[in-house]
Length: 194
Image 1 (cartoon, rainbow, N blue to C red):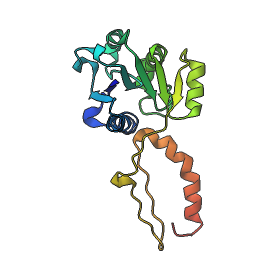
Image 2 (cartoon, helix red, strand yellow):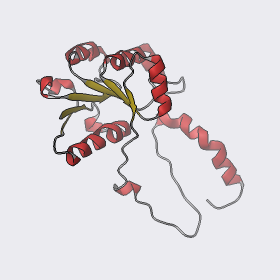
Image 3 (cartoon, rainbow, N blue to C red):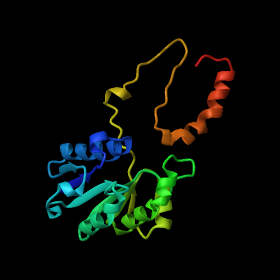
């Protein structure tokens, strides 16, 4: 099976494309001898899509929204799967909300989901949302591919002293941090070392 993985951010990878597209599909190519994986930053880099059995991308096949109709027309007749890591409707608090709304990205994403051979998503709640808000019925839950052998996931046991932890995320996750604010504040006020 020949897979074409489209990652528009390949030269400046984000966490979604890294953990949902690049790592799992490259690993698939290493583990299964009958799977060949090609990674490109856009369909324009591929002369003949017919040599691929399946095309996979996250949300939008092209980050240039003006080019999406042409890109989707090129995909017509080819099997493709769309990865949806999160809701396609951005909350008002999201830094990209205004642009997302102005460009009607939600409708563009829905069109792609409806045309796809299938959709993969991160969790059952997202699957249920997509089943009710799209025409797509072929939706599978596939968790993030976290390679725990990578150095950042190696843990060092600590037996004494205060516990230190960190959180890393982009500006788009500010609302997520607020979910743990009260718990962290309570821990701090308790006077217990952490």
